[in-house]
Length: 198
Image (cartoon, rainbow, N blue to C red; front, top):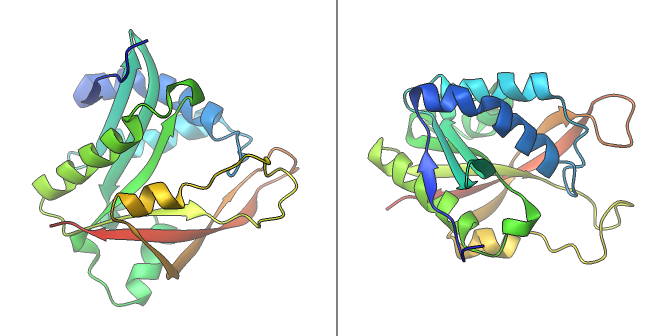
């Protein structure tokens, strides 16, 4: 395999054609710790269509041949959900200045090849081109003694910090999903990271 893979920003029909593949990718990657997501393809396609349907939304993908092996999303925070918006509204911040990064998902065998960095670079470039001043995303907070935490698990905090993001514990929210060992959805604590875009 090549050391890295080209990435592309999808738009129009290309975005719609890729929704099922993107949904499958999210379900696959998010089964692993720390998300432990049971997954639902119908929900995932509906979720991703939110990004695909916006002229100022962003979906970036990496392909190995025809197969999508990684993807990353973003949209204006003002067009995200209430759970994403509320911490910033409570702090009196202007949502119109903030571009929200949904997620980056990448199959394990393609990690460590610069694609994670490329996903952040592409979304930040898009945010700047659209006139946004701040990038923000949130990540799940799992306890250190979580029974499903792998012994070799390394959180991405250092990676995000190296990209210039700052953890903001004062900006927290909850998302609900069904863990692999749960019978139904339950709320999960999420903490935001932000970066000022020069």
